[in-house]
Every structure is written in C-alpha cells, then in structure tokens.
Image (tube, rainbow, N blue to C red; front, side, top):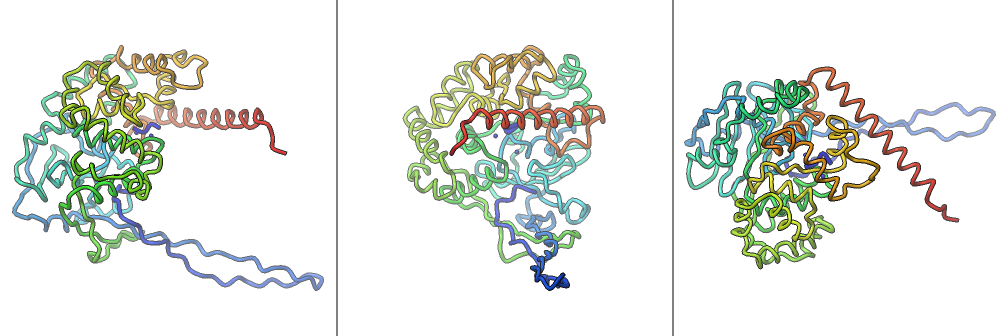
Length: 432
C-alpha cells in the first residue's frame, strides 16, 4: 500500500541464502540420575552478503556517454527524495564504492536521504542519475540517443518551479515549513500512464520489495531486454567482492500490444495472486477504450472525471486512481488517501474528520483530501512532501520535536490497532 499504507535497495534479484554455522550443544551433568535433554545452543546467523551495483562498474558501460548536467539546483530537485519514495518502482540505488563505503549496507526499502546515485529503465532508455550538492546529473547507459535533457525535463516536470510552491505551502502550514527546510526538492514524476496504472494495481496490500519483484518479473516476461548490469557482493564490514558472473538484466516495461499474450495463469505463476485477474481485465478494457491514447487524453480532463474513468478498471480504488492521476496524468490536486493518511490528517489538521467511521467512505475520503486541497496549491505535491517526511528513513533529518510527535503517533496507532484486534476477538464467537 503509495503506501502510507505508497515504498535494502530495490534490486530485484534473489539474495544469497543466509549463512549459519553449526554448533555443538554443551552437555550438562544429570541431576539425581535423571537424564535431561541437552539444550541446543544456536550460534548467531552471519549477515547475508548483499548484491549491489557499484558506480565504478557502471562507469565502464557506454563510457562515451558522459554525465550531463540538468542545471537544476537542490531546491528544485533532489532525486534522493523523489526516485525511491513510492511514486515509482523502477529506480535502483547505485553504491558510490569509490568515495563513500559507509553506505554499502544501506537497508531501507524506501531509500535514504544520503544516497546519491541511481539507475533505472525509463521508456526506451536505461538512465543513470547522480545527485551532487549543487545539481543533478544524468547519463544514458542504453538508448537511442545520449542527450535526453528535454525528455528528463518532462519526466521531472522541471517547467514547474518548485521553490515558489515550497514557499506557498510553508506560509499555510508552520509544521510543513519546518519539514520543507530539511527535505528539499520533492517533485512529482510524470510517468508513462500505462506503466503507472499496472504498477499501482500491483501495489495494493503490498510492500516495496514485493512490488519491485513482481514488476521485475512482469518486465522480464513480457518486455524487451535492454542491458546487463554488473553486480558485486557487499559484506557487513563493507568489503566488496569482485564482479559476479551473475548480472542484473533490465527489461523495458511491456506495451499493451506485448501484454496481449499474457494469461491470468501466467501472472499467478509470477506470484501476482488475486491481482492477476485485475491486470487481465484492466488490459482488455483499456484496449477496448483506446489504449494508451485514452490514458493520455485524461491529462486534459478535470480531477473528478479522471477518477471516475479510472475507477472503471478492475483493481482500481480511489486511492490507486489518485496515485495514477497524480503520478502520470497531471492531476496536481489528487491526494491519495488511505487510513493512515486519514489519521495523519486528523492529527495535524482536523481531529473530527474521520468521525466515528471505521472505514474510508467516499465522503470521508473526499473530506480528508479537501483538508490538503483547502490549504495548499498543488495539493498532491504538498501531500508528497509530507508523505516523505513520515518515512522512517528520513527521520534523522527532521527537527527533534517532530520526530517525537511522529513516534508518539505511531505508538498510539499500534495501541489502537491492538485494542481493535482484541475487541474483535472478544466479539467473535469461540469455536467449540
């Protein structure tokens, strides 16, 4: 679940099996001639080496394509707060093995604020992105052309100035202002709507590693092979192995035409579960509705129309519809809401917004979204900044009192859920 209910590096490869050492149980003296079983003493499991991609290895791929400066300052774009925070699932962290080995064991599924390089397939390209203290660079590792500055300008929506939005939001919300000071450059990516639609069908009731694995299988089965990327093993003490014989193969996201051959059973065999039926039904309806062109046409429609049209597809509820609208269809006022977002809105803006309801009815869903829309222009973008701030991997950059508030809120949520579970158990008739 953009999973405030929205994402280790999201590399979709099988990890090495955990390494453990056998141990010999120590014998104890029997008491009163009674034999007692010898307890088994387990030795601690050794950390599993992680498969990672290293900057120095990727630099050897298409070396003729140099890094190109997007000439965009930190306040306008920070990939570290944008690429791996739940908007999309195609970017993978590249470790800076030359300058900063302390990051080699980074383990957050959401990425962290201090990562600086990524690689990912976007449309017909495999692109490297590098964040520096003053700007953002890119390099094409695979694709029909090397200079894609205009393409990335559209992808990151760089024609929309972010600094004025941050300033406007900060005037409307003192708490957001303090967050904005330490989490700059959170942008909304403008994704291909077909990829975004199917990706968020896979996101329902799911977590980032599983979503990434599902979509990796989806690409591999139905997309086109693009490139092989070298992998290494990183140990707990940041020692790197030599490049492995195994590599990471990247594939394009399949087009609707390539998805025509997909069957529900194929998708279930790829561990998509109940989502398999949704993907097949959505594919068929989308083709009947005009395909990709139909989705692109929604960029010209109002928010209510876009949500109504997207809700017609299988596996698309209001939250997923708003994710697709915000991340691919230019719906800047779309605010993806789930129960957790609702409770955050109750915590920060209106303690009465949820009432006594135990679920997000359409009326409450709209009320929660309106709390953001009434306060902020580009409400969906503002919501994304606040969403990133809630991620545990960004806590250490926040002011201390905000972190305390978030921790107290999390503990209260856990207590509430435990009480609800206990009450539900008491209300259920016991089986004889």
